[in-house]
Image (cartoon, rainbow, N blue to C red):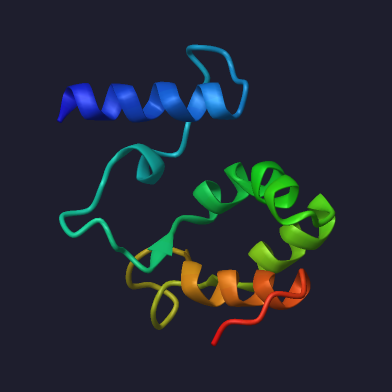
Length: 102
């Protein structure tokens, strides 16, 4: 587990051209048991804005706005953590860059 976490953190830092000791969101370096969680933290989503904007050919401000739009509050305002529904965000990004799912 420790080797995987270090490897994941290193890969993220390299992909984002960060210093070797730059912090990265924990949920991007730890994998869930299934590896298919439908949500990530707002911090993890924000961390990826620049990379997603380039990959999608969208302005960073547009991607940032969609990330903020898809942040869900803790259930009933106090259970759990704020999160971003990755499926809904990706569908919105598809619509923003002209892709259609189907």
